[in-house]
Length: 288
Image 1 (cartoon, rainbow, N blue to C red):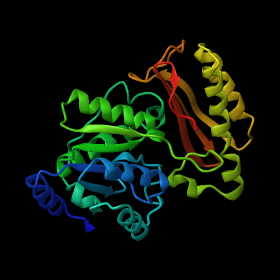
Image 2: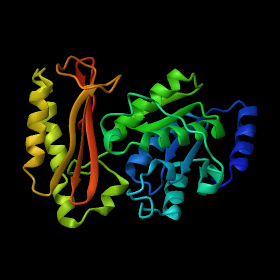
Image 3: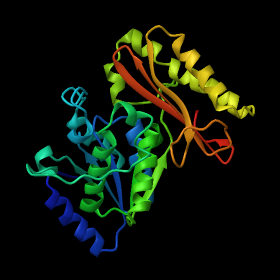
Image 4: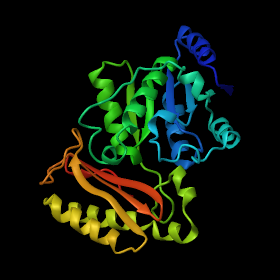
C-alpha cells in the first residue's frame, strides 16, 4: 500500500492507473478509522480496481469552538486497517498541502446545508464540500463512498455532484453500529463510561420512531414528539435537534409520505452525537 502526504504523488499514481484503464474508488475520511470506515473501504474494494483512502482532519470544516485540536488521530492504526482490507493508497496530507496560505476558494450547497447540523455548525458543510471537491479533483475517482450516519453530508455531496456535473458516482453505505445500537463514530471515544452507557438512548428513541412509521403513522410531529420525549427522559442527554425532513431537499415536513430523513443530534454530557433513519418509497431503509 502506498502512503503519501503529497498531492503530486497521488496524481502520479492516478495517471498510471487511468492509463491502464483501471477504475478508482475514493473513501474520504478524517482518520481514526473504525468498523464504519472499514465497511466503506470494503465496498470500494469490491467495486473498483484501485482504492484510495484519504486520511485528513479537515480544518476548514471546524468552527472556532469545535474540537479540531483534540479530534482523535492514530495514523499507524489507520494504515494497518487500510492495508488489511486491501486499500492501494492512503493519502495523509498536512493542512498546508491542501490549503496554501493564500487559499480563498470555497464550494457550498445552499438550502440543504442551512438546517439540521448546519444551524449550529454554519461553516461546516462549506468546508466539507470544498475538501471533497479537492479530493475528487486530485484522485479522479470513479466512485466515492460516504456513510449514512452523516446523512446530511451524504445528501449535500450528492446534490453538489449533480448540480456541478461531476463525473463521479456517490455511493451511500449503511450505518454500522455497536452491539447495543450506538452508531459507530470517532467521537464515541470522548464518552466517559457512564455517558457511553446512556448514549444508547439515541438508538432506543429512533427505534421507536421507526416502529411508528412502520405501523403507518404519517404525522411527522407526533413521531418527533415521541422520539424527543424518549431522549429527554435521559438526564445526561441534551437535544440539539430532532427533525423529520424531506430526504431530497432536507426541509421539514408535516406529513410522512416519503422519502424522508429522521435525524437527531444530541449532547451526551459534552459530546455531540448524531444518528438517523431514512424512509424511501414508504420503506424504512435504515435502523437495524
